[in-house]
Image 1 (cartoon, rainbow, N blue to C red):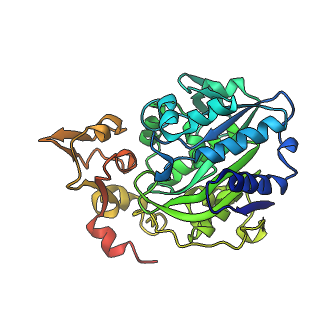
Image 2 (cartoon, rainbow, N blue to C red):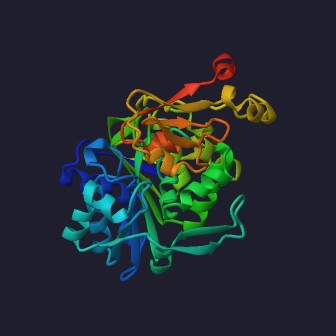
Length: 372
């Protein structure tokens, strides 16, 4: 098994196109992945309608390069995602992807209606409700953004597919799957159901720290790709400076035999030696396996990071509107959290437009969290 990494230092289209082409060439080119006249869904990360320089979403020039690759191979490119806030159409206008779709003649899909997809082989989810647009395409390409993630550690090739769940449906998974490993297991099932034929990651400028929305852009200068999304994420996480085999999704994929260990993955391409030290998200270190589960549940306030609103909070109510357990209320112009109801999904932090949510350690986490 192999993963390709190509050096691409800027979003100048010539450089982006060369990087995407280099990655695809390692797997025989786009023409080996799709057939003429096939409808191909290109699924970028469009978390929110923010400008490309924020490094929150897949850069539009990378989307352009993949659209052109699909067209050259004779396929029919379509682009779509369901962001965490608002409609995909509005987000695409603001992040530049809609403009690229118009210029390249690629249809932009709304991801507005859900359909039921049976998945009897799923380990935790055997029936998904995903965008109905998946029923109208022949192939899927995951086109992710290299970022840290407060709940999953990183978000890349596999986590990107969570956008196939339409709007409010995402909150239901946070309610049902409160533990990191359970949520990660759902993502593994989702990836096996959607089965993208290729996974590309825009890492030219990634995000570190308080990702996936409120972190800091970091120049990484790479485009990653492969046919196995779990392998792509393993390599990406290691390049970011993390012990990627211990990250939730990767750990479960390894345990299920869906990907070999890092030592058995061949990394090829001009960017294969690249390494960085991404600042981790605040709760990247987990107590899973080091503290008995019943104690973690009983002392939740002490054993986990809890979201706390700082002085930047304006009381805009976005967090309250999108909190899965409805644990947030606006009082006296500021968001207030009911920690007995809070499930520690960190959606509030992910979606806050003012970076007003910090993750604060509980007392016992401070005492025991660093013990191995």
